[in-house]
Length: 564
Image (tube, rainbow, N blue to C red; front, side, top):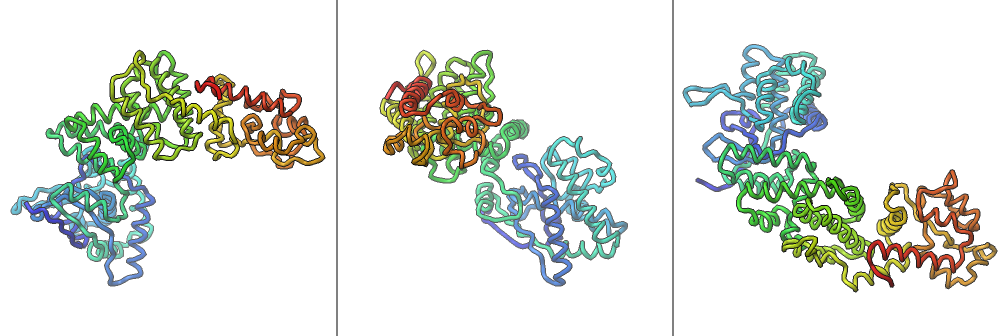
């Protein structure tokens, strides 16, 4: 069998002819074009038709797994265009009668030729789930019955998109041509004769995907997970098992969400590779993950499914257990506030292994949140984070339990000291994400986890103002400018507020500032840190020093850091 890649430009009357028998493989995503894309396609076609009397219109490219002398064509890229063009041609055909209707019907269905061994069937077969629906209502031209359906009762988004795009294109044709059969026929002839697609064909699935990956198209791009899915499902021997595991794959994708499911594959890659990616996720997943499975079925059952469940637990904070669930989900919420997701591979692997042991789970996530907070607050770069989490991943793949727990998840003595020094330093100088995380986490320690926070409403403000008027009370309480500089940006002098306040009020004397600036409309605050300030009589250097010691003690105790 020839392995060469061939590409040719075909008019639509060739694209929808006996030369091609299109099948959308089960691993492909469902039909996803909305009325926005379908409307754009129609408008582009009609505008070109009105303005250009002779030139051809290029509709883009499709990529097929297809042998040269056989019509069978597995669509790797182009499903969206082929399906929408079929709907448009069927909608056009529905306006015709007699010989014209028979003529146009031939572009939608193979009429069959007994002498050539050609059976009558649709020229495009969608995925199994939507094939019968599309064939009956669109390709068999039962639009009157389709119109009578309630789209809300349709079982999936693909069928809803088929319904909506059919209604849209029928309306567009009706409004544009007002039932003028001659005008409709001329527009149809333009589509059939002067519109072109480039069909790139290769008998090899691997080369078809390679071609697809370097081509631009008007379709909705496949994600790496779609291509991995094709690899994996395609290697399952039994057709019945292919359908079964394809459904299991799609259930995972629906559970996680399409883009999130794609993200999950990068986390799974990290679990096995344990280093920063050097190539595209497709290549890395094939190199580091797929070889770990004994079979395609094993990959789905024992890697993808448990890791998807663990991923959803970690991302959605939905750990379930008769004990410790609330505390564990509370820790997961804080982990999800970190400005990177590098902690997720460790969380996913651990939950996939030990989710039934809630005592060990809460032990682990207390340690993981502290490690993530250390890397976050101390501004470790991506290479440092990956290297640090790789140690945890490596140990997770050895025997461990609550009786013999992980060591790598703990902070070293040097890391604890570094974190304590960062906590005792200039907190206001941290980036907003780091500063906000720390101050809200501290407030949560003080509230025993009872408080809830909306970071979008948060501002961090100084008690001792950054600018001190020489004639103010602040100048009397803090006469030493160097001493003010020492304490101004440290955690004891910072409070969280739920909204921006008048900048002029920042320099009010302490008593007035408490009521007008910190206390809110009702003179109270939802933050423990701010409430403590409201209950303080004077804001002197001694008060701030004692507060600093107290707050560092709270952080040290809750994160088990010891003392500076």
